[in-house]
Image 1 (tube, rainbow, N blue to C red):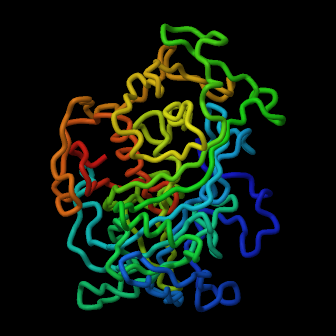
Image 2: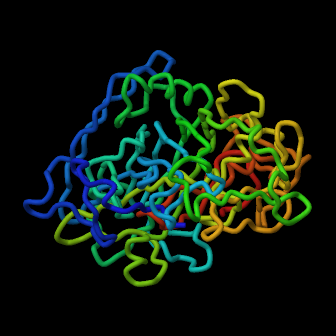
Image 3: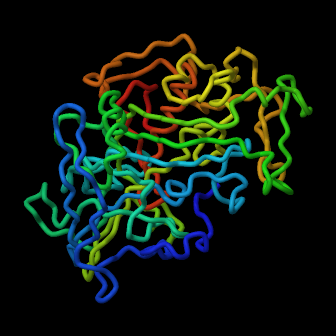
Amino acid sequence: MNRSLPSFLFLGVAGVAACSSSDDTSNTTGTKPTTYDTPAADSISDGNGHQLKTFVAPVDPGAGGIVITASGEVNAISGYPYPPFDPSSTWMVDGWSFKIEKYIVVVDHVTLWSDPNKSPSDQSQHGAQVAHADGPFVVDLHKGGTLDGKGGGGEQAVALTTITSQNDNGNAAFDPTVQYGFGFSTVQAPGDGSAINVNLDASEQADYQLMVKNGYSVYYYGTATWAGDTPGATGDFAMCTETNASGGTSAGAYDFTQLPQTMTFQLGFSTPTNYVNCINYTLSEQTNATIRGVQVSPSQSDIEQVTVHMDHPFWESFEEDTPVHWDQIAAQYIGVTDPVAHVEDMIGVPFDPFTDKNHVVMPWRDCEAAEYTPPGNGAMSFDTLSVPQDPSGTCTGTTPADFSTASCTGIRDYYDFMRYTQSTQGHLNSQGLCYIDRQFPSPAGGS
């Protein structure tokens, strides 16, 4: 499923216009300001006696320079409405309407390397570091920005910083004929006074302090409401059926009405991750290839977008871009008044197959017959592909100081599953895949 929505949904939004994926430049006379607009931000505390640093809007560096932007794409602004505006966009296939209100990400260590194609078969390999730009930048991607995003269709991005030369290589100018490897990191929200507040306001101070307290690098806040039987869910989007655990579909095989019909979510991920040697989706889309890295222009600045997709934690598989679900989360709050979903509540929850709070095996629920078919006729089970499962497994390096050397024997529960797949959400220029270097307890591997 792609993540774009029809551009007509965003008509009337100031500063937003559809753009082609080949729009890499900003310093074109008469079309863009010299200084990028500064997002509205308030002075907030990290809870440890420090105020977050004031963000200074970057200035367009012009020819040979790079502007680093960030975007959560259209869904970070609109959420996942049900019924979907466009069946080809991302939506909850089990009939949930997902409203995002805050999507806070901490981005740091934007890095450029020489020789991104050092090993065609091993994306983790590259040449020496030639440039970097550090934050850490704290940004709510739900708020969008004044720049067109790389995914088009109403997507918005915010400028974070610039890189004007090879600042790790004697400040040499970038060679416009050369591609440089590109990477960045999501890091745990710092409470040491180093964080730069890009656009958080006073209402988000408590959210940021929670991120600091729990070591979150990515944070979601909003509401999920089941909408599979509401007016407007007609035609193909009014066919909710369930598949019983022994195979086949049947009405009433599982009592989905016992699930809360609306709930708040406050999902924090303590999953610091390095996104390494990314594929440049903008260049690759133009040539139908997989081109790694970025390339400056000799005539104007080059925009490169850190993209953090919102859907990854809810995938049904570790395979890229699989359908998303909410039933498995809601089922853990049966009988709870005013439930608030947390990632930590998924510790110990089995996913192969899923059971609800009462330890009853769950079936799949499909609210759109034409666009989606559950993978199999049995119980609801999520797929880890080649990553090992180990329900009784152990992890090492479970404190932040040891995260860089942490490992696990396998995916133990849905807590591990969500964190592992969430950590793949960083991309370059919308869809460009990166080598995933997890800095938290997880099974070994870079995918």
